[in-house]
Length: 202
Image 1 (cartoon, rainbow, N blue to C red):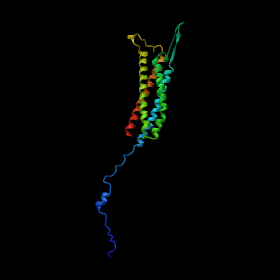
Image 2 (spheres, rainbow, N blue to C red; image 1 turned 120 degrees about the vertical axis):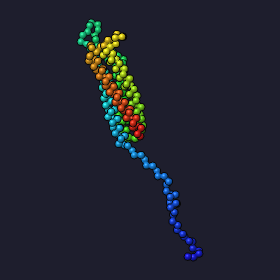
Image 3 (cartoon, rainbow, N blue to C red; image 1 turned 30 degrees about the vertical axis):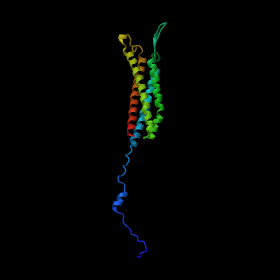
Image 4 (cartoon, rainbow, N blue to C red; image 1 turned 60 degrees about the vertical axis):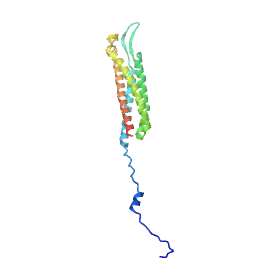
């Protein structure tokens, strides 16, 4: 080799240098997605929502059509019982109709949660609005239940007579409406729990 030529010396890379180029810590793997579990909750939410719609609208319809007229009457009086005779029953009809209407409008959002199980916005919106609907349905059902109890049993201390012995059909319909409202309340409670569980898993 001539002195003028440049000497080229190939050196192998040491293991220490190779280790220096390697990452010190391996990036953690993303947690497994529970898409099937979330989609199952969303589908169950949709089914329960439809059942709650049926219960709420059936309760409003049963109360709104409750009316009975006794077959005997006098020259000045006609014995009749109707839901609009009591403001509590009128509030019940309006409240349960609002709850049923909201549940119908909430169906598209429930479908969105089926298509996109990891979407937080629609699920959080449903959680808030379902809680409001639960409060409204519970207050309407409880108020109507108190009047139905008085209609069945009366109150001797205040001289409130039980009218269900005379207006049997009327009391049967309003009692069924109250039962339907509490079924809707239980179903909406299930919806709130499902939304909370889904948000916790996201």
